[in-house]
Amino acid sequence: MPIIESTYKPPFWAKKSFVSTVFSGLARKVDGVKQTRERITLLDSDFLDLDWSYAQNKSNKVIILLHGLEGNAQRPYITGAAKYFNDNGIDAVGVNFRGCSGVPNLLFRSYHSGATEDLDAVVKHVLSKDIYDEIYIKGISLGANMTLNYVGEGRDLPNEIKAVIAISTPCDLRGSCGELMSLKNKHYAIRFLAHLKDKLKPKLEQFPDNISIEDFNSINTLIDFDNVYTSRAHGFKDAFDYYARASCLQFLPNIQVPSLVVNALNDSFLSAECYPVKEAKHNPNLFLEMPKYGGHVGFIGKGNVYYNERRALEFVTAKK
Image 1 (spheres, rainbow, N blue to C red):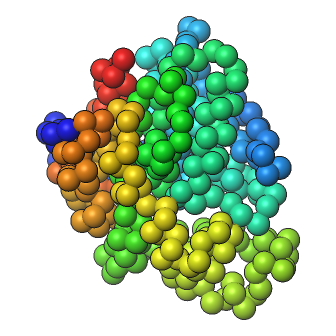
Image 2: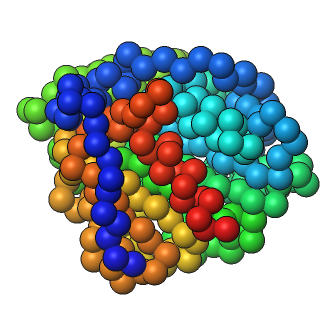
């Protein structure tokens, strides 16, 4: 599919990547979203917490919303999308990945960029309600990579899945990790690592046979974290094996569901490999939009509706 020419124009003060990224992550507030929590049990006996919000009138359409690294379903990029879709007649369910709902998950494993088995469980649960004829999936950052993996890995997808949207997608996890650990992003990397290590601490006592204090103390970088925890807990040889096997770039040619990828050219988290121009040109189901501005999930828009939220609704409406 030809590359989509973006129409995004940020406010004059939000053209710099750092400003749009930080403002959107720390300063944006979204009011008027009433979420109802539902807990589902997974096949391995762990659980996921889902936060539902609903359109004013009964709807047969729903959007599944997936957050990014160390996010949750209360982040403004989730509640903003939920509110906008609810206001336009579509129910929304924000997925809290394992351990991200404010309650520790039960197992040594948690979540990662390629954990599509959990997304599949959510889709099946939504379908079991026997309400929705149309399902859309929108992922942000880590959740965006998971979304594209889900529709590209080759599983039999339900006919109800009509479109997916991936925002600020780290299509190549190794390249994106390298960017995140670069000097320009040091402040972000430190923040992410602190959150990840805080969440890992309780597992030292809970699962002493799986991880030791020496292992924990050896974690000084994000790659260390993926070597010590992510890879071991989720069946990968090491961090680089995880990045290789969980990156969505390899699955993009297989996608048969209309899929929109919106990656800003000034996103400091993304490496050159995270802009899949070749893959989009050769797959009629893959639509790639590369705005000049927007940073990482920072597509600030008028009326507190972000550009990526408007584009998501436009895309799913057009793909009927």
